Length: 574
Image (cartoon, rainbow, N blue to C red; front, side):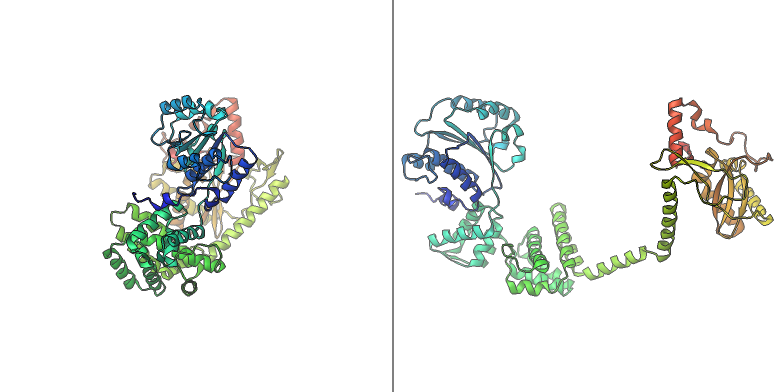
């Protein structure tokens, strides 16, 4: 007789043998007991978790000669035909190969006929998400109202690809990943039946490598048994699966703790020469540091899946790292794993990651130094003062008070009107007082500033300044009075830095310019500098404001009231 693979030989034949899916087996068993058998089921979950096996068990439970029963006998003719795949009443359909509308139309024709030998005709559609949209649509009506002797059981690993119209017509059961302990218990049963000597660590390694799938675990065991020659050891399992192994992992972790780049690079070279896959090395290191992270956070936890680590080894290695280091190392290993997939030289990506891990303390100190440099105490103090002033102004606006700030002695200063945020009533706020004096020296510096702007050809700036007046200076600033509207907006938005730079250059000082709004233009005087006739002072016409209709003008006035009147022509924006 031909050899039968372990995953086929040890496929569960009743609900009691279904490992790790008790929530599904109990629910289906109770439904059979109470006679509440659905017409359509949808089994979803990862590969190798028992979806197809459960479908066959349910088919046997419905058609067993002793049934419907929760414990099919597996001895009667109906059960044996289903086990051997020769039953005329149980149809297994691979949706990946029969995904078109023609196959579904054939299925719709066959459901009309009564069962040949059993009570129910059971259609098991595997990988149902592979059906086309047209095939799903053709199945809808039959799936919703099938004949009373028909049961549909659909299985999928990607339930999100199954249309909601199909899911709503089915009872859905979600299969979960099987735990390492459950897989380990099943593997021990299998190897005991085969009378093979084994190491517990070897079976646990297979269970971890299976990643929650019982079928994968049995397939791996089948391979290892073929190599082991009646003795299943950890070394042989590692050899067959291409794993790095605990010994190499411990060496790498020790080199990381010792901050020894030479040893790390030497071990990478040895691993490559021995044929180890670098992606596998990174994966096992990540699982190892995951165990250290869990231990540092909460100690040894029952049910946590540690990757081939003894308790003493975990405690010793965890003491050499801080939790912050471990988390950073895990992230760096994941980044290296992504880089290896696309890098033309995977070795370089791994070596760079390992060297960074060895030099973690230096990198951490560099980051801390950069962080401390970025935070200047002087800047923090200035920001705090500005925040306090802003909070005071916003508080006054919210209260709707008519500003209590003192006004300047200059009669040309205009009281600006605005609206408080969240308040429809206008709020009259006065500018912050500016105590400056107009002196002969200040006027002389201002005249030199005008001459410097003229000599450098700053005609646009001069065109704005001929409508402005010098209002004085103090130790920290100088004040320029400008009419409200376009002129003030251009000076503040575009020309402020130019004027400040020129004034400070001719004066040898470092002052800040304040542009103060005035109600009336200065007395008529000669143009400031030699301004060309083709560079007139900007007006509202330059911005197309007078061409707007009343609705748009009202919107613009509202925007100016909220954001200010500093209009900027698009051509002026660099």
